[in-house]
Length: 129
View (cartoon, rainbow, N blue to C red):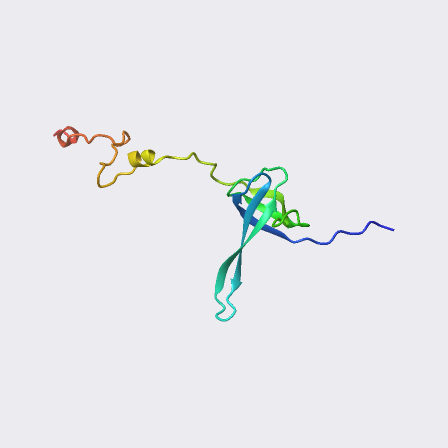
């Protein structure tokens, strides 16, 4: 007799919105559905807890997840593959002093940038006759 076939499992494509410790992710799966009464298309989302065995996905990655047996109290999905890596890397944390130096306010003047060239006198640029 041949080996029993495995059941078809649900797969979703979503975005990693949070990393929760080792090998755990939160993935948001967006979808569109018409409103029951007014038939306007409404954007909805489902959040699933995902097991990432290799610990390779980062926040912002577009990933494919597959349904699986319960792995913990909340995790019933596993990471299949990373469809697209996040466009931005993990940024460095900045302090309030860094922001205060770069953003002008009523109390602090605008920072002088070296990129702006000094204006040349009008007499020097006028053509000679």
